[in-house]
Length: 142
Image (tube, rainbow, N blue to C red; front, top):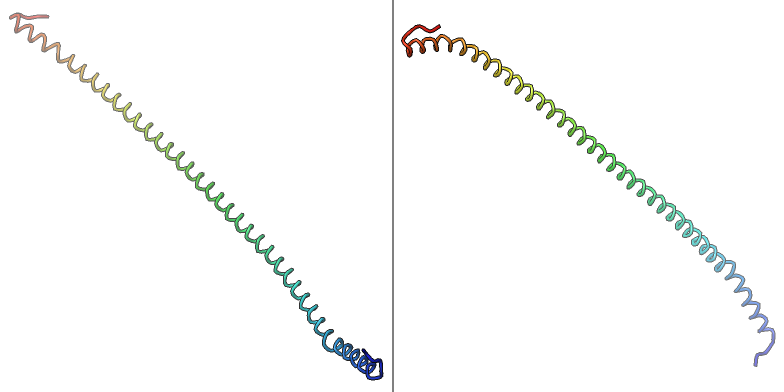
């Protein structure tokens, strides 16, 4: 059985003093360091989350900027294609008009030359026909 004598109380006091000393010089600093470490880890996690959110936002902004740039470049390309098509149509229309004018001028010139040739032939036909009639008939024809 346990005897309750002075030695027991001295050991009990020694034990309590040891607990107090350990608490003051060992447990308290260790707990303080553990709390400080926990606080630092929590702070680092918050910073990491904040930086991740910022990186995500910057990535979204970058992707949105790229999408806008692509959209704008497609609009520019489509506008350039439209302008080129309009210019092509205009040039073709002018060329067709010029060609039509040239053909009309050529037709008019051919018509004019045909009329001139016809008049010239008419002028030459009368004396020739009188000559042939005189030869065939053997007499003068008026």
